[in-house]
Image (cartoon, rainbow, N blue to C red; front, side, top):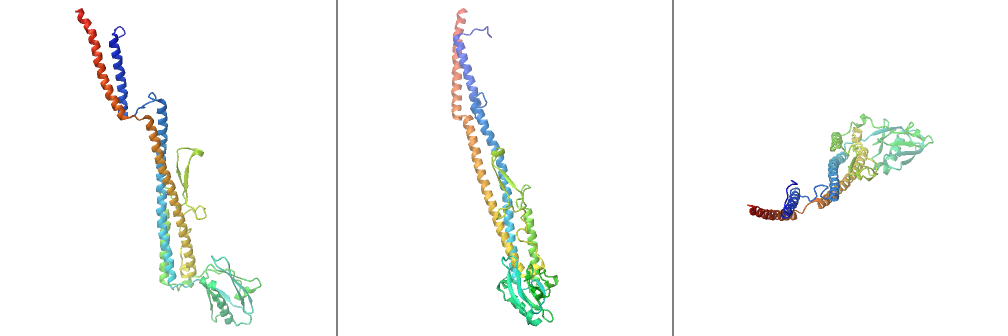
Length: 396
């Protein structure tokens, strides 16, 4: 082709037409891809900057999936806490209903026979009460039955013991012994001057009631006891079923939600784990931890024990409310971070698009102008060739 000689006019028009075709190809590529920067050759700085922004946006989009899974895990725990709280409230109602029934007998413990010519101090240590109850006694000169009446009267006359449902009665035939009612968990000691002999022996801890002591409990209380244990079992099952994707916050698991794409010290995250009101880790949210220990006949026969259980259940409901507040705080933090990440991803993509996207209106106008220019160039080239053809006609 180098042997072919073109006139200056033809060559000029040909080069112009080739340039127009090249620009038309580039414009059509931009129209087809929507981008003005399709590779490093178009604009290396813009291309690599945009690729970095899009890469980070993609990383954050992947991390948002972990945030969504974390939200589902917390939501499952929250729903579990809601159901457990309702069950606990039913347990409280069961205990209150049992207290309203007069069919309890209370746990009973025989303190022994009252001895003569003794004096000293009885000390009652009650579970849940900070200060023990002290009662002075003096049985000097009293007959056996009189001493039993006297000691029972001292116990029954104490307002604090009466408040906790602890009473005493003379027992035996003749009535020379003293029996305490609602004595489970109660600890009784005496002064160190030998006055423990006032009760026929050393009595330092009252044993739990025997089954024979509970025969008088009503059928209503026995039925409520069975209902209590059924509800307690359901409570434990709810806690075990409140997991999501293998992670159960109510059974002691820990949830870590990642917030950015960095590693090491630059990584930001949020850890969720059930905590008690005092800040310690709660562990498994089971009935025993919430005060819903397994009920037995001794518990439901004793008003005192039921009152103690009622207090424990109410404390457990307080713990559940604290846990619910924790889950709500965790949901708020993760939801806010998810919304922030979405906006950040949009910002990153918008920045990348600003560097690489083409103005489609401008490119469409350029395409039309270049097509017109191409047509004009073809016409100009045709005219230039016609000038060369006029020479050929002279030679004919």
